[in-house]
Image (cartoon, rainbow, N blue to C red; front, side, top):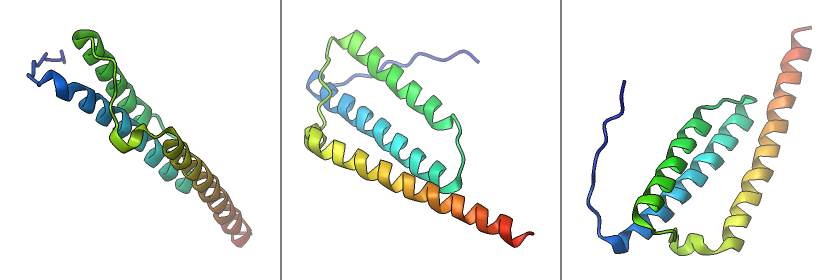
Length: 111
């Protein structure tokens, strides 16, 4: 199926906010996918494919508008974003260990 091109009109002053929202949405999807997959002991590429399409849109918008700024309001704070990422990584590690322990328990119970 061929993609249909759609043209939208936006006030130029709002594009940086939209780019920031797209970027933060992409990060949130990555964090949610990581937590979900860690808790289930699985890995897939669905989230990566979704994020790739968002990243492509961001680059298209930047290229077509010349606007490079991704305004993220509170998300502009790198320390806060890094703390969120640290929490997600720590929680993912915990969930992964809990899943491994569950599988080991199931394996022992089946003997």
